Structure formats: C-alpha cells, structure tokens
Image (cartoon, rainbow, N blue to C red; front, side, top):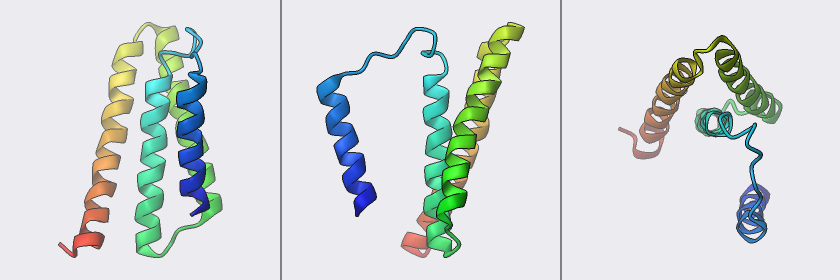
Length: 110
C-alpha cells in the first residue's frame, strides 16, 4: 500500500511541478522507462511466483536502467545510437511481454 501511495504522490507532484528534462538526457529517458518497466513486470512476476526479494528488485531496477542507458549512450558515441536503441527496446519488450504472459497465467489460471 505504501508503494501505491508513493506512486500516486509521485504522479501528482510530477503533474504539478512539470519538471523539464535536460536535452542531453532526452534520448535516454524512453529507454530508461522501458528498462524500468521490465524490472517492474519482472518483480510482479516474481511476487506471483512467490520468490520476490526486495533487494533483488531494487538492484534489478537500477541496473536495468543504467545498463540500457549506457548501451544507448555507447551507440550514440559509435554512431549507431538508433540501431542500439531499437535493439534494447526489442529485447526489453520481449522480456516485458514474457513476464506479462506469466502474470496473465497466474491471474487467470490460463
């Protein structure tokens, strides 16, 4: 319940404050959000499987975001940023849909 309240408070503060994303960070933000969603869906799946560990979740969340952003940053420096961005989104998208399917099987017993 605390996490849900924290999420709601964060959304409200974000809507009221309207923070501006620096231009230098803009290319990495969508990739970081997709990486964070991958960690969230993985955590939800682990919770339903009965193997959730909060330390593993936090480390997974932070490392997913940092590694995904670093891959895109490296791609930008090598001149293949859009290709690596697409690759990261595809890989994380596959993981998200895989976790979503497992969550659906748990919830609907199908």
